[in-house]
Image 1 (cartoon, helix red, strand yellow):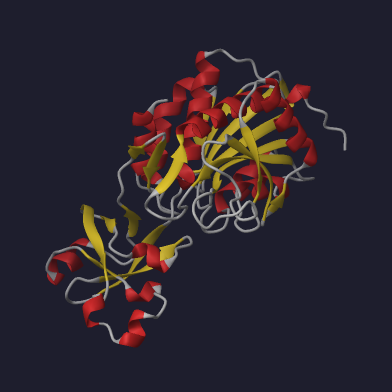
Image 2 (tube, helix red, strand yellow):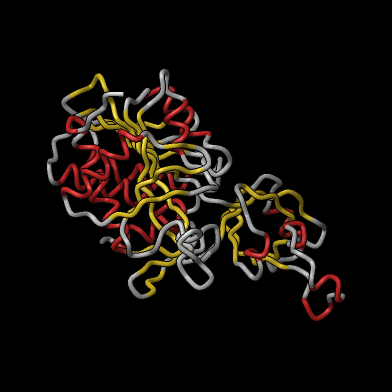
Length: 351
């Protein structure tokens, strides 16, 4: 597994609406692996690989945006207040390093708040709110106001490290899936795999704020078959139960049954299970009662609807700066996606 590529993908900035850095990294990789590559008006990267059947195209979507923030105000001392871009648990912001992507260059900062030593007893027991935090750039107020503008995006800082059999970093949601889709394109090209159907690999924008990119790309591509690629909850540690864990690290890639935004097509679920079992790819079922993915956008924003499923990467600590995925689960996700997009002619698609 190319951990250097995974690290680059995971750590390159790309908050919702401000995906240019990660988009540029993707564009620098995919040209040699596809028949055509383009960027649409909203910023999705659309890669086309020709297959034998161009009348029933397939599409896989991996969102390239990461949860982040946007500068909301700057006071005279240079402290920055911010608004979230995507869903945050405020307690996860404590003592985090962030990068403000200002017009003059990137600026490292830290999340600050009121020290516990001077909190009143009632404050210590109160749940944190995002308004309790500010960003400290360690610079004089005048300099901050010269360098930073209202509306500048902010992302978290967290390098990728190996922890046992796993990788650990911020934004594995959803850069793990971006990596899986990149590696799938590379291996299809290098192994000269013949695809049954035209395939569109789409790196979408603004998923974390409402599946916005996939809606635009699905409407244009109009896939018959859609595969969502995203992370999913692995609550498999202390305090978990079979009912709450959703998935477990190291138990293989996950085949989605449903989440709060989509009920996957039973035909696609059967097809994906059959492909995995035939190739002895380790997999586990995923039923997620909260959270949504680009899968829903492909299913509902294609005229007449698309036959959709999703490959999910089990991940601990989702939306924290210490997200963790198992290397073997990543490998299994690549292996399954390759088979799924190559062999749609082997599925039973009768309704």
